[in-house]
Image 1 (cartoon, rainbow, N blue to C red):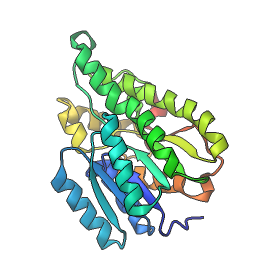
Image 2 (image 1 turned 135 degrees about the vertical axis):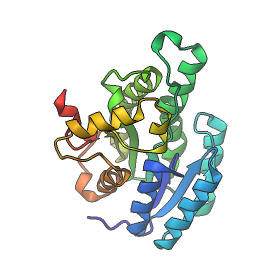
Image 3 (image 1 turned 135 degrees about the horizontal axis):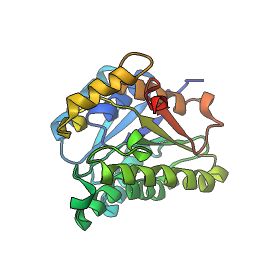
Amino acid sequence: MFNLDGKVALITGGSRGIGRAIALRFAENKMNVVVNYVRHKKDAQETADLVKEKGGKCLIVKANVAKEEDVKEMFDTIKEEFGGLDVLVSNAASGVLKPALELTERHWNWAMDINARALLTLVQQGKPLMGRGSRIMAVSSLGSVRAIENYTTVGASKAALESLVRHLAVELGDSGININTISAGAVDTDALKHFPNREQILDSALQRTPLGRLTTPDDVADIALFLCSDLSKMIQGQVITVDGGYAIRG
């Protein structure tokens, strides 16, 4: 069920946090990994070194997933290096943390392009390299269905991302490609450090999580691994929430 030896996985935003955890989990299961980054080259190299320590082959590719030409060039590189692609994880994300009434057109378009539209471009450019049984995953957050202070652009773009996954699930079904969303709870990553009320968010999440601890990047990586396996072959177009039960507390 977890015979993933030699399969090739692309993880966008794979240099740090959840992306890095997924890359390492895949490498532990003998997959080859493509780590995409746009700014943090040193972190991407550190991830690649860790992947290689676990026995996997790792290719680092710099590309802005919001730019179609960058994405096309990235897949050209993957085709040249590996010949094809088995798993695509759309994890790269960005956004502006401001009250809704202070947002500009640029803020809105920036978040939508990177967090939602990028998945469409990735699938359009990546599908020719993917055969039956391939897997696509989009990483989302609870902000897609909840109102979180200063999270308007990111939350709205994540909601659009989840809707896009459902529509793609229908269109990709005939090709035998599974696509799903992984929605993570409050995870203490570098992204959360940009929140002025970070400690409050983490403390509140911890108190309200039935399982008594915060979600970690490794928890998210475990679900990504499951979605790569034959055990998930009938899961299509779904949002799998990884939060220790936090979301059920209202």
